[in-house]
Length: 386
Image 1: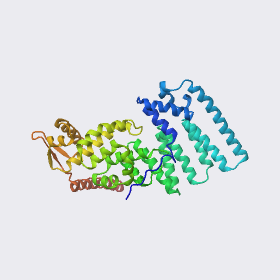
Image 2: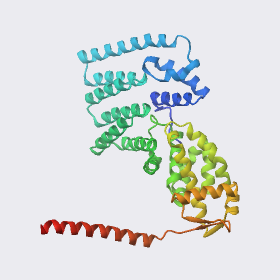
Image 3: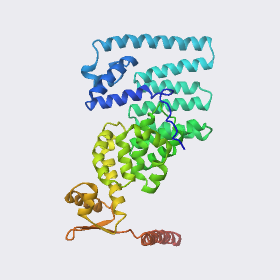
Image 4: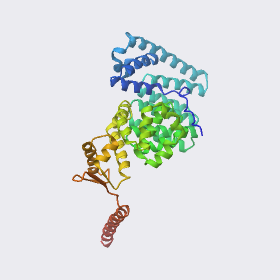
């Protein structure tokens, strides 16, 4: 079957406040391109220095007199919006009032005034009748929180959105909520939950106002590489038409992912540092760069060792294209941390894998639970005797 085309970003472009936050982050990392793009975006949005931290990140890229010009522009625009709202309240109906309130909320969101934007969208939600309109306001508040890295605000409104969806949300908004929750989980380093939600949203993705489709595929592939075993990864991700249609737009990710699935460990290790550089420039993933780097190494080492009862350090280092001392240090570190079930015979230069005894572990766990239950029964019996 032919691969389905990716959804167009033109119909629902990424929210400008998130674009602003992403460019600000990259500009602070020293990207000249991001700084130039940020300057143009700030001027087009009317986001003055007084209302957004983006201006400080522009530096020398800011045009002369930008702040003064934008300040007057903002005052005029806000006055017009307030006048429109007053007219709607006095002369028009509820839908027109809601539309006027929504435009004010969009204004404060666009200029990155978080508190005023959240309050404005709360007013929009109060003026809304349908559940879908109320959910759209909650989604807007979540995007404001994601842009401002206000995780308590994001968490509270994701919970609110889930409660609203349970009462009767349409499928399109249900699926968008999964992407919102997945992105939040990614930013909080809950990679297993994020990967499951991203994967579940793969065939129905429509939340381009939150992240572009290309970025969504990038997040899905990276998180699934960490959490899924190779057969599942091959069946659910590598063979998914949505992935195949978009991953080629990111050659580095495509090569790294293909190398992982096809056990081309040398290519994988060669591409990994470059892939990590891309992750370092991502606002959500950069905070957890060391963790993601470690997990991407653990899974590939475990995958290699799963095929052997024992393997020489020289053989494994050759497969990964690194030196034997490097692979020894890496494996020893993960063995000590309990992440890899193996032991190293330094004399023979061999890594011997040790399969965990699942049955014995289950038996010991049952004994521990039984001991705890007996202790509680004994304490209860003493209380009853008294």
